[in-house]
Image (cartoon, rainbow, N blue to C red; front, side, top):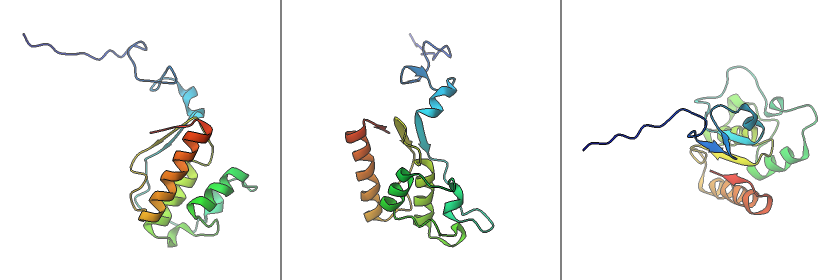
Length: 133
Protein backbone atom coordinates (compact mmCIF):
# COMPACT_ATOMS: atom_id res chain seq x y z
CA UNK A 1 0.00 0.00 0.00
CA UNK A 2 1.02 3.57 -0.63
CA UNK A 3 0.71 5.82 2.42
CA UNK A 4 0.82 9.60 2.44
CA UNK A 5 1.68 11.69 5.46
CA UNK A 6 -0.45 14.77 5.93
CA UNK A 7 0.81 17.65 8.01
CA UNK A 8 -1.98 19.18 9.99
CA UNK A 9 -2.31 22.94 10.19
CA UNK A 10 -3.63 22.81 13.74
CA UNK A 11 -1.68 24.38 16.60
CA UNK A 12 -1.06 20.89 18.00
CA UNK A 13 1.01 19.82 14.97
CA UNK A 14 2.52 23.21 14.08
CA UNK A 15 6.25 23.89 14.13
CA UNK A 16 7.04 25.38 17.53
CA UNK A 17 9.65 27.69 18.97
CA UNK A 18 9.78 27.88 22.76
CA UNK A 19 6.67 25.68 22.78
CA UNK A 20 4.67 28.24 20.77
CA UNK A 21 3.41 27.89 17.18
CA UNK A 22 5.94 29.93 15.22
CA UNK A 23 3.68 30.86 12.30
CA UNK A 24 0.79 32.10 14.40
CA UNK A 25 2.23 33.55 17.60
CA UNK A 26 3.43 37.10 16.95
CA UNK A 27 4.68 37.28 20.55
CA UNK A 28 7.74 35.37 19.32
CA UNK A 29 8.91 38.51 17.52
CA UNK A 30 10.22 39.69 20.89
CA UNK A 31 12.21 36.49 21.40
CA UNK A 32 13.75 35.81 17.97
CA UNK A 33 16.28 37.69 15.81
CA UNK A 34 15.98 36.77 12.15
CA UNK A 35 18.43 37.76 9.48
CA UNK A 36 18.02 36.35 6.03
CA UNK A 37 16.17 38.84 3.89
CA UNK A 38 19.36 40.46 2.62
CA UNK A 39 19.37 43.61 0.55
CA UNK A 40 20.40 42.77 -3.02
CA UNK A 41 22.07 46.20 -3.14
CA UNK A 42 22.38 49.26 -0.94
CA UNK A 43 19.31 51.50 -0.63
CA UNK A 44 19.21 54.48 -2.97
CA UNK A 45 19.92 57.90 -1.55
CA UNK A 46 22.28 59.00 1.16
CA UNK A 47 21.91 56.86 4.27
CA UNK A 48 24.45 56.45 7.03
CA UNK A 49 24.61 53.49 9.38
CA UNK A 50 23.83 55.63 12.45
CA UNK A 51 20.43 56.43 10.91
CA UNK A 52 19.29 52.83 11.54
CA UNK A 53 19.51 53.37 15.29
CA UNK A 54 18.18 55.71 17.97
CA UNK A 55 20.06 58.96 18.52
CA UNK A 56 21.70 57.49 21.60
CA UNK A 57 23.01 54.15 20.41
CA UNK A 58 22.78 51.46 23.12
CA UNK A 59 26.04 50.04 24.49
CA UNK A 60 25.24 46.52 23.24
CA UNK A 61 24.93 47.87 19.70
CA UNK A 62 28.19 49.79 20.01
CA UNK A 63 29.94 46.62 21.18
CA UNK A 64 28.48 44.54 18.35
CA UNK A 65 29.47 47.23 15.82
CA UNK A 66 33.03 47.04 17.13
CA UNK A 67 33.03 43.24 16.81
CA UNK A 68 31.63 43.42 13.25
CA UNK A 69 33.91 46.37 12.43
CA UNK A 70 31.04 48.59 11.34
CA UNK A 71 31.57 52.35 11.20
CA UNK A 72 28.41 54.33 11.99
CA UNK A 73 29.53 57.09 9.61
CA UNK A 74 29.53 54.81 6.56
CA UNK A 75 27.16 55.84 3.78
CA UNK A 76 25.58 52.55 2.73
CA UNK A 77 25.76 53.53 -0.96
CA UNK A 78 29.55 53.42 -0.83
CA UNK A 79 30.40 50.21 1.01
CA UNK A 80 31.57 46.82 -0.23
CA UNK A 81 29.28 43.77 -0.32
CA UNK A 82 30.95 42.45 2.84
CA UNK A 83 30.52 45.75 4.66
CA UNK A 84 26.87 45.87 3.58
CA UNK A 85 26.32 42.37 4.99
CA UNK A 86 27.95 43.41 8.30
CA UNK A 87 25.67 46.47 8.48
CA UNK A 88 22.64 44.23 7.93
CA UNK A 89 23.84 41.77 10.58
CA UNK A 90 24.31 44.62 13.05
CA UNK A 91 20.84 45.90 12.29
CA UNK A 92 19.26 42.44 12.59
CA UNK A 93 21.02 41.53 15.84
CA UNK A 94 21.02 44.95 17.51
CA UNK A 95 18.54 43.77 20.11
CA UNK A 96 19.66 40.64 21.93
CA UNK A 97 16.97 37.99 21.87
CA UNK A 98 16.73 34.38 23.06
CA UNK A 99 17.04 32.91 19.56
CA UNK A 100 19.05 33.98 16.52
CA UNK A 101 18.05 32.55 13.13
CA UNK A 102 20.44 33.37 10.30
CA UNK A 103 20.12 32.38 6.66
CA UNK A 104 23.22 32.73 4.47
CA UNK A 105 24.76 35.06 7.05
CA UNK A 106 28.35 34.43 6.02
CA UNK A 107 27.84 35.09 2.30
CA UNK A 108 29.85 38.15 1.17
CA UNK A 109 31.98 38.02 4.34
CA UNK A 110 35.70 37.39 4.08
CA UNK A 111 37.20 34.45 5.96
CA UNK A 112 38.33 36.56 8.93
CA UNK A 113 34.91 38.18 9.37
CA UNK A 114 33.18 34.78 9.08
CA UNK A 115 35.30 33.60 11.99
CA UNK A 116 34.50 36.77 13.97
CA UNK A 117 30.75 36.34 13.39
CA UNK A 118 30.76 32.65 14.27
CA UNK A 119 32.80 33.32 17.41
CA UNK A 120 30.33 36.03 18.46
CA UNK A 121 27.39 33.67 17.91
CA UNK A 122 29.18 30.88 19.81
CA UNK A 123 29.81 33.24 22.73
CA UNK A 124 26.16 34.38 22.75
CA UNK A 125 25.10 30.75 22.90
CA UNK A 126 27.58 29.58 25.54
CA UNK A 127 27.61 32.68 27.78
CA UNK A 128 24.05 33.96 27.41
CA UNK A 129 22.10 30.82 26.54
CA UNK A 130 20.98 32.08 23.13
CA UNK A 131 19.89 29.45 20.63
CA UNK A 132 21.59 30.00 17.26
CA UNK A 133 20.28 28.44 14.06
